[in-house]
Length: 379
Ligand SMILES: Cc1ncc(COP(=O)(O)O)c(C=O)c1O
View 1 (cartoon, rainbow, N blue to C red):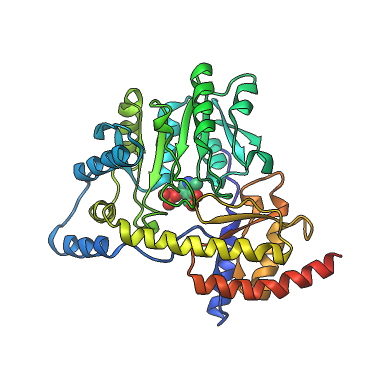
View 2 (cartoon, rainbow, N blue to C red):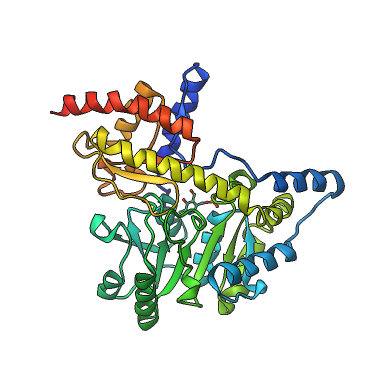
């Protein structure tokens, strides 16, 4: 079994925590994790359950039904709750999706840049990732034309919209075109919808609106601000549900019971959670206004998620060393592009703006003179 590539943002985070322990004021923009915590009603439910329920292995029928209702309410799609499998986050949901839908050796297409774990999970499970270079012209997303041109056709396609690390959203017509090409060519789609709920223009559409046989993974880690509760789900097509259930039983048993109770309450905390999205919207606007002043003009304005993917090729060809120096000098932690793109990522960094607005303002204050000095250095 090949050893997966390391997640290098973890190295940056480790350094950030070390600097913090030494008394430095660190702003954590290296990971995509809300700093807000679970919604108040979810925490209240968790307190009640802890006091009253010894808990055990369990899958909440009420939560599966509530998630099914979410598909009807948000996307106009009917999903049988029996097809929803609760997991410990999107990460195991991805493992279930891949294990149940594909056979060892299968080729799966995906965008480069993309979330680091896709490539590594595919390799760890014995599949072949086929990374399609997606630049600013494609807004860093796979296109139907790229899929149509693949010879031979891959067995599967992984899409993420909004995406990590760019935040870009695949437009509805393009999503429809991708679904059409995949149907014609017998390509099974896995859609990572973990950043749904976090969009700054039109809301992202679910692949299930266009392709009912797709597999969808999602999680409580992002919009619901419950990253550490380790709760997510897979929507499995009817023909793969038995296989996905067999895998979840063997590999993971069940998602944490406490989290399932809390997650059910969180799904009705829209006003509080949309308040977090308003903060991200302000943070995004502040960064989009500031980054060009820093000389970072080549950025893809994110339609959703909480990331900005910035080209720093005029300053360095070693994004990991660059992030390390930036952190040491300013206390601002960012993620090196090499995590998301093994070919061109050496000249990109990713900013996460899932922090408070005062922290974003402070980060910009520190970044401005630092980038000015680097620009002078490079001239
Ligand atoms: C695109 C994407 N998918 C999946 C995950 C994993 O999320 P979870 O915490 O639900 O396992 C992440 C985490 O950052 C992500 O960015």
